[in-house]
Image: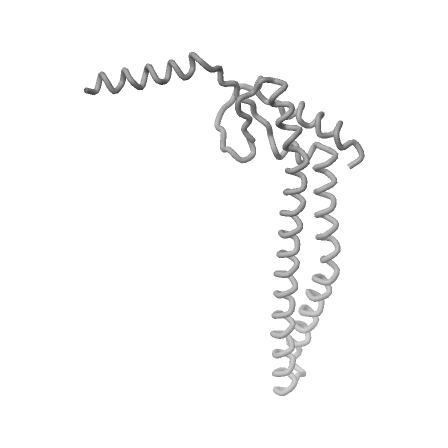
Length: 169
């Protein structure tokens, strides 16, 4: 019974590989994001979003530090100290909301940017894959591939194709 099962598996495997050649390619999605003009444009847009939120967050941090310094003064009476503590707690709540909103906005924009980039470059990856005769192309940055022969890495060709299609972006 075991021999029959092994024979069937062996025949199935040999017939699969005998009738069709499987050619696998590898790309590095991180390199594509960091080295293409289009990817750099997306990264710059996200950096600018982060920079636009920074002044408000830094101003809130400064306000909180100022209140903390005022609270350390031994000259404050009990009533003033209670008011300052309440004000500090309120400032911290507002600060946390602002930071959470900024993070949410950033993540939303990042998803939009990555989806737009993906829609633009996938046809180019497919085009390079078809022209090279690949059956399957894996993204090295997301598959957890432990080893691959570097001759199947087509990242440079994909980067060239993207930069050719989107030269000014």
